Length: 379
Length: 225
Image (cartoon, rainbow over all chains, first blue to last red; front, side, top):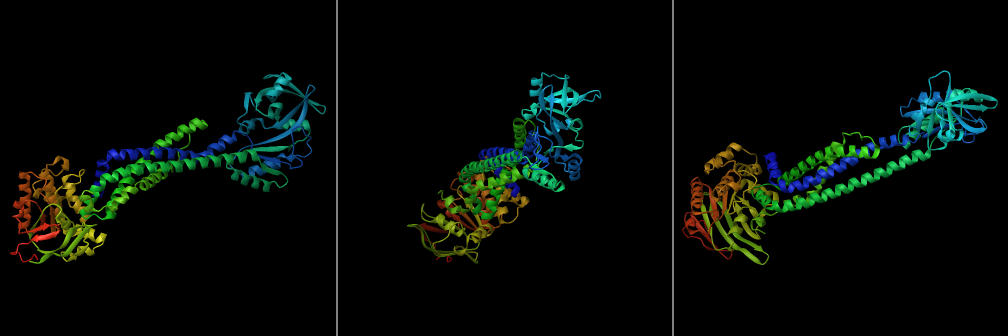
């Protein structure tokens, strides 16, 4: 009989309840979209920040940091550094790329040359735009990638030769790619690391390693600490501007989302409250009768609360489904890719909407105080 | 016959208004009592107190050994469910429940529902073909018969009827009164508020009120004081 009564209550007041359920669906939709966004925002932001390039650097140390153009006075052993990275086997490492910088001359113009793993640069710096190729498979040429400023300065083009000289040694390179990095790298020439090591007479030596590591500021710091323990002779440090900006932005977005969720919960509860106040006035007669028939306050209020709970659950479920779609759309608009669906959103949204509906059903709880004799007197 | 209802010096005041001013009488089990008097004389107040819908200011109202005035809220709820069957002038059916569900609602609040018994109760009042109808689809007489079936479904000790024919036409009034005759014949105890002398004359005795006091209790009926 309980469920029969519940069904009849829902049907009998469907006009009024439409308003409440619309409020609950709307609230549930926005809340589930925001929560889904909140749950996925870290992964998305991490992806976005990885576009900014390296967020961790291994260098010889504070005093001997190898700056582009500086003499290779302090260097690292390439195999030691990479052995430590490989030993940690952290799947969060997106790319680990060595660099050795020297200054060579192209004709009479000094040029910063970076020896690196050309094929790994796109993973380290996804935002760099390349015209041509990163590397070449041809054995009869030494490939190089040239920054766009160097191209203009030296009047180069794709496949054009580039002559470099360094302390009496010369080499003829072929421009296989022109890179637009939007920074100092536009003034550099990138070669395969062994070529530069050979030029500089520094086999197996590198100036620094740049890493791109997925994760939060804390997990990146943790990884840096483990790497530092494995490489006590070198300095391992997160690039603070990137990791801190990421953490700061994440916290701001989370605060915004939580504030919005709370605001929407309150507004939804107020809307339900207004509807239920009107419904409570309509139901005073029914409650008076139920009490006259021997209905206990607990049983009558439980019936109304169950009705509101069903409304909340239905509103939460429909809202969650719509909200997931909304979050996907928002993900497309904001990040250019869809936000992943987090299935825990469904029970969470339903629970929140049931709680909001029950909170908004305060006027129905007050029906327990109705006096049948007063109602029947028409007061 | 055993005394089912015993009212002693019962008073009820609403602020400065005295609705019942020291009323005393007794009702034996199986009696049909007509409570009569002008509007505002305290008839409905008496019915409400005897039915546990209201509480007295002072005095005693004892129904089936239970002093209604001493019951707390939950005690009154149990009392109404177990001992009283109400029939109102305005029928007071739940509009979104069918005739059957209105009867089952009383079962639900009493203990457990029994659809077969509820159907039989409606068939007994001549509504076997109106079981699934909503109150809005029933005539006044039919609605009152649903209310009678609902009042009887839990086998109450006392049936309290507040002007049960007040909203009915002559034909429907006769149908409902016939139901009360049948109930009385079966031994039910009935207290019925009515303005109609013709109905009052059908009762075993009449108790007449004026200004919250009893003005007439036939001497031939010794149970009344």
